[in-house]
Image (cartoon, rainbow, N blue to C red; front, side, top):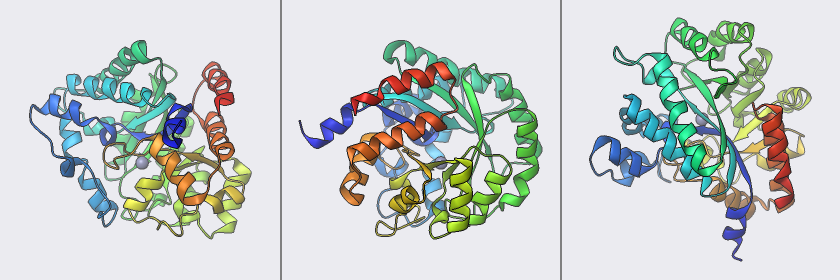
Length: 325
Ligand SMILES: [Zn+2]
């Protein structure tokens, strides 16, 4: 068996994956009724920074302005992840980017859950949804969104997140919002240390984030690494995306450094379409580039089981697949 086929057959968990950035080109074409060239929705190696990377979301976001679009996007997304033996995925999206006069927050979430549930009937992949607050949205709108989504907690929604341009909006401004999330007993992860400062990671952990998205800025910062190791904070690393947004270079990517620091490292895709990747590619990449062994891939899988915002029965099932490594 070729190495890539072996990797493709291994069980997988993806904890950091955006629905809009991971919609299949076929679903976008179906929803918009036109051809879409790869350059319109894929960042590629020439991407200069996070802002340019985020430009690639314009078309996918156009596709999720109706309940049908959201349903199609979610259904085809989950079916796609199943093709590489993804056993569990936490798919995230920002409901407020789809809310309009005709479509309320509750309907938006219901449409995504409907699409996912239909797909699970076919492919058996387990999932949960993480709802993202966007940094550029008014915080009172984000809080209202979280309150609506809380009603779906344990019914397909598992957690909240904070996403968007980290460098332009300091973490300090969101401490209150996540104090409220904590009060509402919504678990959460926060995009922190993607392109911003390591202190953003410390702040995220301090306000109760069980995981952080990316955390690349932790490189070289032993103090905050130790804080995350002690708190068992899940670190959602997304190598291809991190290189495209210039959060790190191939040569100084801190994967081994984080493993050696005892961090709870997980491997994820971020955006399957914008970054033109999947779990198989991420796993092959870290094997080739950083000499990650199959045993270490298994460790990432087990970290993901621990760090998942899933109920115990799902975690037990995920553990039962670990001996396939
Ligand atoms: Zn992300």
